[in-house]
Image 1 (tube, rainbow, N blue to C red):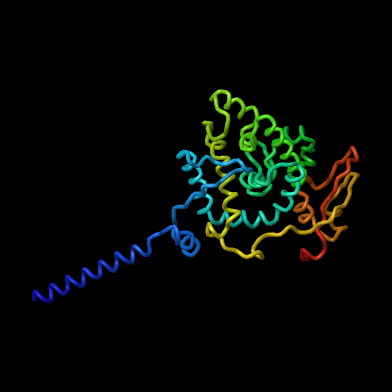
Image 2: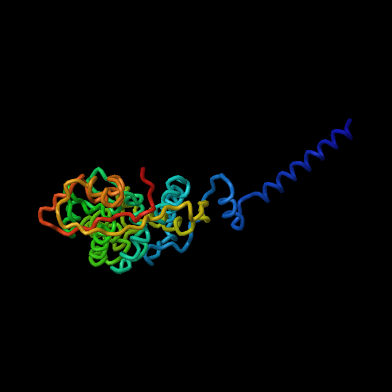
Length: 308
């Protein structure tokens, strides 16, 4: 009996040793961490890259407060998988429109990620009255040359609204001295950021004590930049054909009133819905145009939609 008990104890000890060795082998390490993150559905802590920056301006990640805030945004946006996949899909469609406009104005490419966190690359409507991909307020739009009224609202015009965003950001950079502060000012206003810098006696965004939204703003932008630039690293797997594409269009010049956009659309072999889909800045089913202003209406090229 004692021999059997000793044998059982020995077997038990061997089993514990085997489990311990297996646990050590299976424990996350720097080497297998990213592979496991990609290939299974467990939730892992993320390693915050040490070289993160916005528009070439480094994040001071040696500061524990900055590191924690960056970690939060990486976690939130990595594990909100459905939203993340939508951002990849829409980025493929809209970034090719936004990128050359930023480059033409000398605005860093990183600002395309500002549009991502502002609107999710949709024509969003905010409770405060901001509209479009760049979430432009009515007064800001008008001050920068956009037509904003019930009939036509060019804040919904992607190219024109991107031009306005560039103008605002260049002015903010000129006033505040860094692209990081210019991005913060897009959320809180030039005057608001300037006032807080002066009140708190600091000169950069990362030293400012700010409210929840503006305090997270840069970290959210950089998190989306990091994730959208490294999909597989953060567990996003897709094929190019899974992403959205911009439907090619041609422009039709309109310099008179249009009484019925349903009839107008039919002349080009499309319906009213498709006309509005490609021209969301046309807000009503007609165009007043009493001043005979010159507009360009986008018409999708033939063959990209099947119509009944």
